[in-house]
Length: 358
Image (cartoon, rainbow, N blue to C red):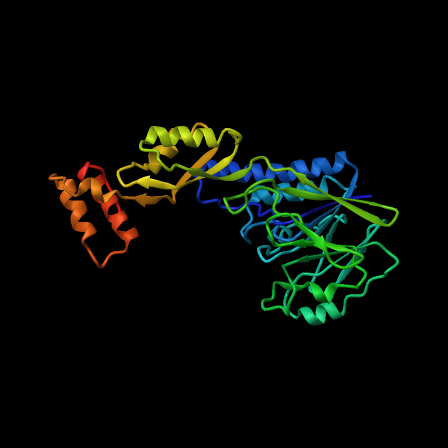
């Protein structure tokens, strides 16, 4: 028997860091990736899909997203969908659904169990009172037990309603703890019998969700569970750190960025972080760099984290306005070395006729 474990899809995310057109396109791509996952499930003979919370991003679900999810569930009667609401879900796509189909299985504040044939799937929606909830968990140790929860796994007493104290779930007959809430794939042992897993989000929606994204495919045979992470995202988000030490012109910096990004797909969302040590007169024009690279990636954003290097000796006898400015700033005792460098860089750009902002 095969089961898909997914979570944190966050359909209808606004993705405000993108332009309106690209944000609209990415929202459509997230919906399409969900549809592709269900098509994959049907093609692979998957009997159940566990959605461990945060199917949607907000309670205001668009008609398009609602219709697509409802159609996916109703259109695949041979697949059981186990939907556990997370902290972002409000059940909005269920409110106007006239009689959800029997293959949609829901959970409440207390434990609810479903017999899926080769396994029993048990879940509860976190709403506080974890000690009482966990104390009431009763599983048949003779069955394969999958438990679904949405929250933050911890190894201590819960401090928030979303904390899941793993210690209270050990030695309870759990074979696989299907979690949601953490947006990256993580898996580890729960106890001698079972393990816990976060599948991560299905698509990276920003630069805190970089790398491979997808779902976990479970294969249950002879009472044993094997799991495999399946990368499935339409696009990847990548943070690319580029050392530009010693480079003195925008063209040199662009060339180094292109060299460092040689293995990054043009379909990616890329954040460039410039690091290293640069001369105070070096021009790090981030807006121009983004413009020069915008055709090379789906989306590109640049950030400057370089350290400024100032050779004050070059300006000691410089009779120009530039030299006088550098010497004046150097003599300031109320500024740190870092602040002096930042002031001098802005001043250099102003003297060169550039628009600067502090």
